[in-house]
Structure formats: C-alpha cells, structure tokens
Image (tube, rainbow, N blue to C red; front, top):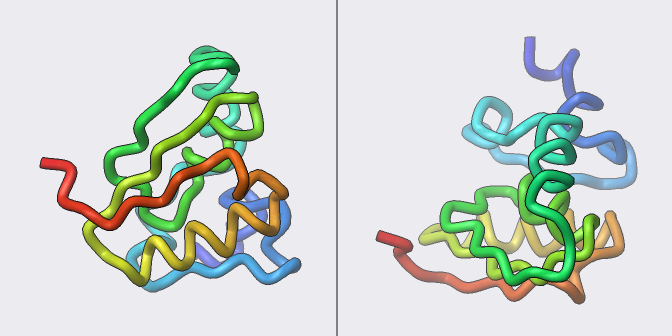
Length: 101
C-alpha cells in the first residue's frame, strides 16, 4: 500500500530517499507538506519539533524558511539530513537530537 504511494511521499524517492518502517505511514505527503510550507512562507525560522525523516522540514526549507528539525531518534535525524541533501536544502536546516517535549 505505502510502496505504491512512494512518489506521493517524496517525488525524488528514486534518488535515494531513506525511510524506515514507521516513516512510511507517518511522513507528510510531499504535496501536502509543500502546501503547508507555502502558507508559512519563507524568511522565517520554523521549528519542526518531531521531524522524523524530514518531509515537512524539507518543504519548509524549500520555501525559504530556516528550519530547526528536532527528533529524539538519531536514526530519523540521519535520514532527514540525508533526504534534505537530496532535495538540496540541507544547508537551510539545523538538525537537533532532542526530546521536543
């Protein structure tokens, strides 16, 4: 079910996007994340408190926001960092390993 939708989650999936089992059902689909990011707008500092594999952080950075991507799981942060590099926005995101609560 999720595999068939992979390009809805990340249009650049075939470029090496990394997802773990949980991320397949928890990542925001790319078009939805992009719509949210357009509403937030660029030029802001935005905290993605539970960034997971980076879907929202990537969309926000793509719109010109500076993003602080926080997750308690270091593996997810590594995936988010890798995925952001694929989209060319890793330099607009600070990845922080921490409990956002």
